[in-house]
Length: 529
Image (cartoon, rainbow, N blue to C red; front, top):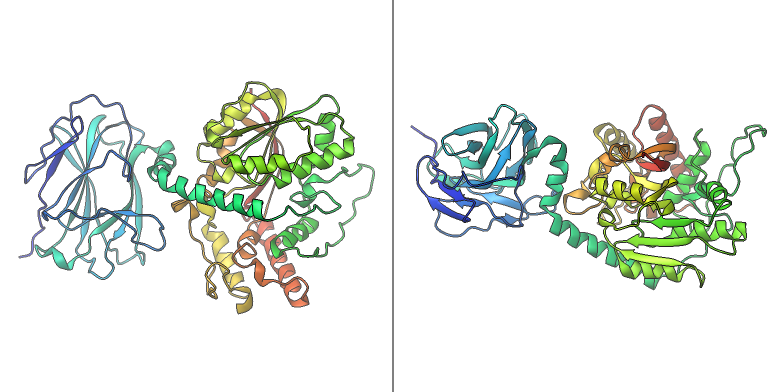
């Protein structure tokens, strides 16, 4: 008869950080110690979990396993158990786990992963799941389970890998990609913090790359018309008395990329208007010398174009006071070099979620396409709200919103992928890989970076601190179909490619009008006092 292999057990003393093998059932030590944390999260950062193993050889615990998840997973072999430190459970607590096989070459059938909660006199089995599910054709499984039924108090989490045979060598182990217990409303933040060091390393590499490009490439001379995100900074507001006329169909500019042109074409066809940031700037500048804050600033192109152009129109003898904040001091210095001599500028290099700003000091706070990289949204909105004067405004220009990690939701992906597969191979060649893609990629960039880390929560968190005056949303699919991976495949001087872009814009509009979810936000907001 084949029985379940019984792993050797260990108990972890949180107060001393020690573990002791006791065999058979788990007897915990030191669980009565004072514990105030309501969170446990598996992370490469300390404190490390204790692991019991029948194999005396030290195992490599963190390893890259899945190409779809570009960060390390914690590995548990058959017969091993993981034990967390102690944490408090209450009615809001949930268990979140994401796992898969650690070795695709070995069998998964018969491997189970068991989640238990332990305290000084109780052990509760929370869930026992097979590593392989015949109904799911996926290498990664995920679940979130409420712990409302668990008595409040201090607990330890145990995760065990068991098999149907005592010969464990033929079975795959388990790769734990995410494992956390904490309040439901904080879970996304908890999971993101688990790999904070890795994300910050990748963020720094990205920022350094942007800084190098900025220093090595001369800033292009802006076109005669002020740039926006193109129409967003128009000089004049439409007159109420003038009859509505359809805008002229735009033509590609010299050297213009497919995505930028598609945005101008989209704006000419949509029956909605974006906030007119330029005229609003002029209106606010008439009554006082403005004190302006920018945050998340990198190259600063849109911000500087807006300020220089509007100040030129106003013939401003005294330019606004400017406080530039962003993650990289070199980039901020590069931005200040683009300003005329004599502009009053203050620089603060800091994460946008950790800014230190004077209260009630700014007339405008401007962020251009950066909120999607900010993790500590609540802290950011609170700080910016408190830093604005009573009639001050927050301007978000080109903020990415929608599913986290720059993913498309299932409905949008199904539509976009079907559209992508109608394109010729010449338009489906991926600039990142050099390969022709059969399907549109939909990877989650937030797995190992801060790109899109909380894009699905930008508007919900914003609404707790600001109310909207003007909001404009667009761009459900074009950013993915004509973005950096594929945009260079379209030569706008060729009629065929120009017609292809036009067709994609028409399909974008059809999807948007049918209720598709936009990914690009432009808005003007006022603080909630």
